[in-house]
Image (cartoon, rainbow, N blue to C red; front, side):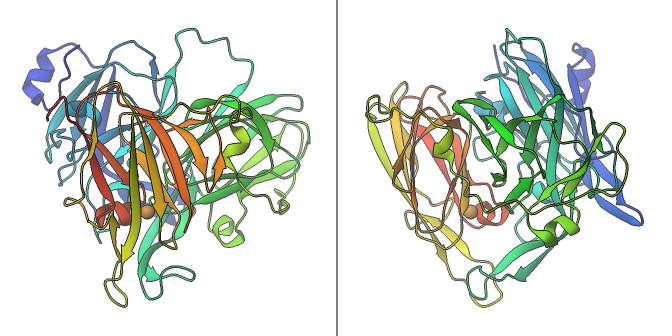
Length: 444
Ligand SMILES: [Cu+2]
């Protein structure tokens, strides 16, 4: 089907009604008593509405931009054309201030996806992913087996951002920090709890919609059985005590409700949890204060969910290998670092050249002291090696490359057109950490 975007409002009015409508505009949300967040959101609040689609069934989305700046909504994790992907770097037209765009595409693949603003913010922390412009986009598989669980969607976000010199970051470099946090629309204890019954099974779909921070979550007395990463079922579902996720990552986890009480599902970092990052889980018939217990130290390891037989059945050799070296460039004391890929800052970064239907190994070499959650648009990739450890079968669209480590992923170039590759930390992507995939056999 033909991809359309940027149609004018008059034209849309004469067309069929859209399946979904988003209004971008100013919102005011009381995340805690006497603490209102004034930001830009979708349809009057945050998170935006849950967009539920069926894999393979075409959808029409109308986006009305009632804000004063040109905006873009990016449909994160979908295999759709660049004209509708929601990235100006790929050629998607901006939604003008007080303008409108209509998007039509075929949603795939199935799983936990999301949508968010995809514009430049720079040092303006009232823009892009710092705002309330984020929401779940769930693509149901064609043969969805009936639900035997209660589904709970949790989107994590940080508020009142500021630029400051952080402990542990590059010496003297500015990073973004946050004074408040929310899970969905409220700080810990301020919204409705997750109400459960003993013996019930929950499917948690967790999204880290923070513009720059990693989060580690625990629920005292319970285990998370991780069944999907970035919405894609993992070969080896496994129970863990702590979920760790970088910006833009999603985790689907089953939780058996077998430990009655009132609990805090929250960030393992005390300061972050006390600043709001958590939600109360309340068993029927239980009352009292919500309880927290610090979980034991546990290392998050993507390869734990991968295929164990990598020696016998390794990921096939690629048609091409693309080494990508990440470095920061000191810009001065109390300045924001710049970022380079193979020595160059976007838009001067070298294109990643591919040909249709060939397989490419991206070799990420992080020569910086930060962890980077890197994202490839319009494609999914398979994890091949994490810090020297081989794996296979874990399919993602964001992967965290740990500081001073290497990560290898492989993808099939089967979706021609420009595709953006970038660090999902807003400050990093805005200060150089982006590159474009070019299909040599389909010049843009
Ligand atoms: Cu980064």
